[in-house]
Length: 168
Image (cartoon, rainbow, N blue to C red; front, side, top):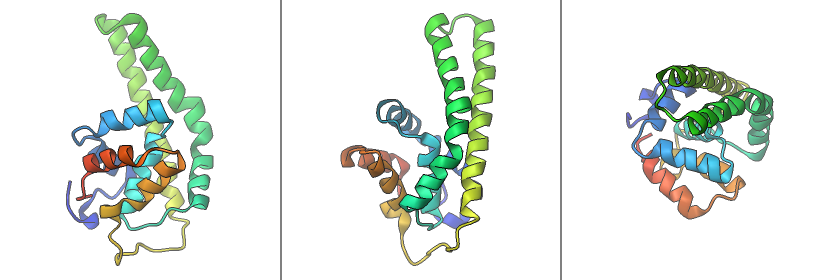
């Protein structure tokens, strides 16, 4: 990924796709999701905020969680669970079932994209501006804040941030 925030893809979705595609990031994010209840879309939003020098606090995090909760619980998570359950029940050998799973995955991704659009739009209501005097990307302050909020260990956070790299 480019080394300066100004050269990043402008939107949260594009940023998320780039970051998630880094070696090891997807697996670590899914492990955090499955084992520690981390919302990967919120996690990626926090990284995006860090890359833009925007500060997340408890009120903003709560507002974001409130904004996406219903959509996530009623659409994103059920689609994910359905897709995963089909894989367990039917395996991946039947091409017609795999075609159905692929369609469900596409719907899940579109639902996640909508969720991220809402997260991105929350930032437009914030009255602060990026603080270019602070190096947020080396400390990943928002990512750390969110993960500490969920009681994720410092060791696990460090492992994730090493995968993220310092050039976001």
